Structure formats: C-alpha cells, structure tokens
Image (cartoon, rainbow, N blue to C red; front, side, top):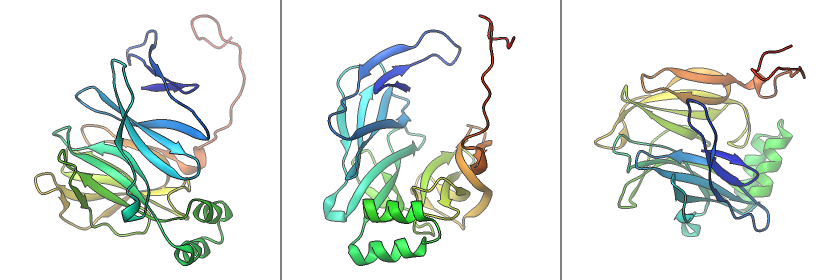
Length: 238
C-alpha cells in the first residue's frame, strides 16, 4: 500500500498505474502510516492522533470502509499499539505496545536520555516510558514476549524460527537509531525460546525476506545527499 496526501493507494510491484483505495479521514491533528498487509487481503493502518494515542484500523485491499481494529487500553496505561507483522497462520499478530507512566516515571526516563534532547522531549510530551512486544491471537488474547530492554519494537517473524526486532541505540522508540536483534521463537507456543543475539548496529530501518535475509538502512543514511538532474522519458539521466 502507498499513501499519497492521506489517500491510500496500492501499486503492482511489477510496475504500472497505482489504484486508489480510499481517502483517509484527517480530522484534527491526525497522521496515517502503514502497518501490515495480510495474506487475506486486509491492510492494517496506523492512526497517530497527535499527541494522545496510536490506533490500528483495517481496510480491505479492494477498498471499502475503514474499521477500528485495535485501540490502546487505558486500563493498561497504553499510549498506542502498532502492528509490525504476523505469524504464518496470518491471523496471529505481532504488536508493539507503547506504555504511559506517571509524571515521576516520565521524568526518570527523560533524564536517562538527557544527552539526546529530542528523545527526552518526546518522552515528556507523549508520556511514553516503555514499549513491549505482544502476540495477539485471533481470539484477541494477548501474550507479552519476554525480551530485555525498556523500548523494543518493529518485530518480524522469520521462517528460520526466529523473531527479529529492534532496540534503540541511544534514545527511546521515537529515536531513529536502532540495534537489530534476533531471538529463537516457537510459533506453536508463541514465545521466545532462547537468548537474543545482536545482528546489526545503528540501523534506521530494516526488513527481512522470506529466506531470512536482513535488509537495512544505516542510521547515518536517513537523509542521504541528493542532486537534481535532468532525465529523459525513459528515466535516463541526460
């Protein structure tokens, strides 16, 4: 799925024209981003209601109504839920859940990252003090995975029998510099079965192919140098 000015589109990977799915509602301070595209044709979308919550919605990849999928649970002090991936059945989800804290907990976390003012400011503004990885079953049952670190996110399942996820190198989840970790994982039991291993340092984005190949962008390459050029209609630089 591709977003363009808060309109959701899909485009064939082989090339060709994009297909418009629907406009996304943007009432108030709202932004939308992609979550996951499931085998059954469901697209999950992340709605950021600035600065109060992160919510998950779903839509068919054929278009149609946008429907709530999962909202943060205030009884659990959740700020937001983000969908990273799913298990082979296509019905069990891997989520990142961001948790809020009281004023003292927020300030303690902000002080931990006082050398990174943008990270400390984000903690104070949003009130987020930690994030965790949760497995969500088709019956909406939750299981929190036992992983070290206050801020873990971006989890993906790999057919080698592992999950791959990220932890910030310096600041919290809203920082843009991560280390990538892998941990052995049992699909049948939906739990981590061994110690995590560090597999890449200082990464801004990553993904994993079906054969377990890790692809990532180094953190220092988030905004690479650009140069304007002339191109002909075939895309050749002239």
